Amino acid sequence: MTWTCPNCGRGFRNKNQWHSCEIRELDHHLQRRSPAVREMVGRLLEAAHGFGAVEMVPVKTSIQCRLMDRD
Image (cartoon, one colour):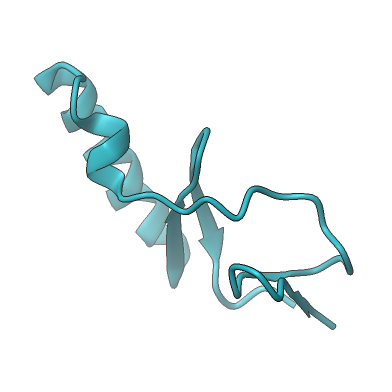
């Protein structure tokens, strides 16, 4: 069973899950970062895709990777 936030449309496992509705672009998080940090984030995201279908959600304070085929 999932709950969908009526404000941002994101789905969660728990009803009324606390979250930030402020979704940003990945570039927003990386715009002032060094090339080494950008490369590391790229490698982490690439590795995350090795676990299956992954949704990348850059939000206000973090970059989240969620498996899409969770029960």
